[in-house]
Length: 164
Image: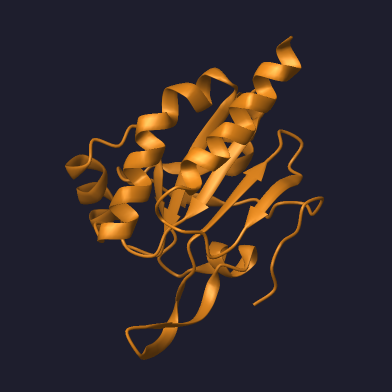
């Protein structure tokens, strides 16, 4: 599992969203003033993923106000992504990477062990991609609780300082 580092070029991608419409990182980057938060989550509707998604939802206005867009990516099929987005009233795009090709490119797919069971799966990870396509932040195996607040503090605080 090769991991990205700050300064690397973020692999571009186009994936279907909860409605089956294609969303490309390049288009979202072009529309974002300061960058795109791309986060990978293991399983739509699971407790940790729900906590994380709702944290992004609840902080979306602050992130957007600072110039950042948010994209969530999982290996779930479109129907599961749609059900999750609807159940949790998520207002940012959730994308289906059903063959985990994008997760592979970002180094977020690989061996993991949960409750003594080993398997290949998605590692909860978050990236900030600058408008030019450069990875600014690469965080692997983040906690579901608390990492959105820490990310928001860095991004929104940095955006506020840059505007002064």
